[in-house]
Figure 1 (cartoon, rainbow, N blue to C red):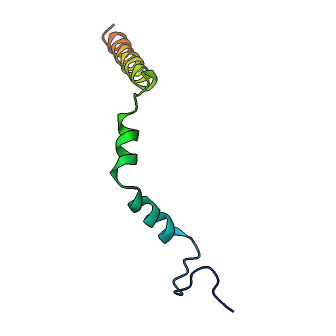
Figure 2: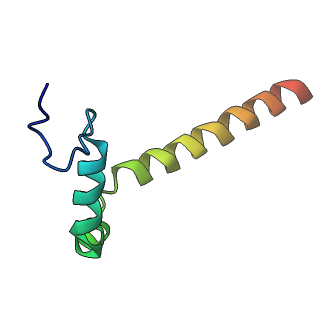
Figure 3: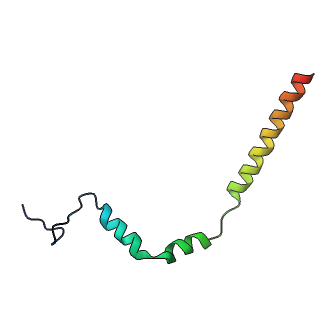
Length: 67
């Protein structure tokens, strides 16, 4: 059976080597652009609300325990 994918005979059936080479050839420009993109405040607000709710629950449990 002839190998028609790669003339050197280094056929990678999963394609991971080709994807890795494309990633390396991309260079740092792609990663810098992704890091420079503005982040939405949604996850940060959710984290703050979660911490406030957790503190309120701990305070309520402490208040009930000391009652």
